[in-house]
Amino acid sequence: MKFLLNMNLPRALGRHLSSRGHSCRHAGDIGLASADDERIVAEARRTREVIITHDLDYGTILAFSGEDAPSVIIIRMTNTHPDRLLSRLTAVLADVERALAGGAIVVLEDAAARVRRLPIE
Image 1 (tube, rainbow, N blue to C red):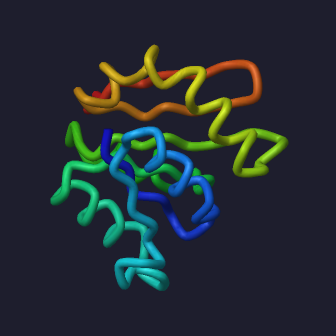
Image 2: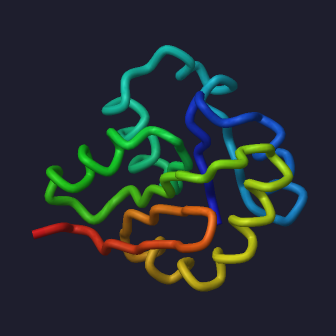
């Protein structure tokens, strides 16, 4: 999969994902360090990347957009160490990959992953 990490996530997570064969860019590395959420959404839509973030605003933006892309993974975990994030993401990625490919908001929690397909009507 192709991922775009928001500024609120460590670059180490991107390196871990890349080492497992995923394409991964960090907003801070591509000139989007101070970009607003809508700009990040537009970039992810243009490049067909899944946004990974802690920011709940992305779910709201996508829910009201009426569009089916980009997908977003919103991380709502208590332990956000990069190794723990990678472990949890890896554990659920196969289960949510199809939904993400078709357009979805995935909320990743410590013990659950909730999926809401896009567009939300």
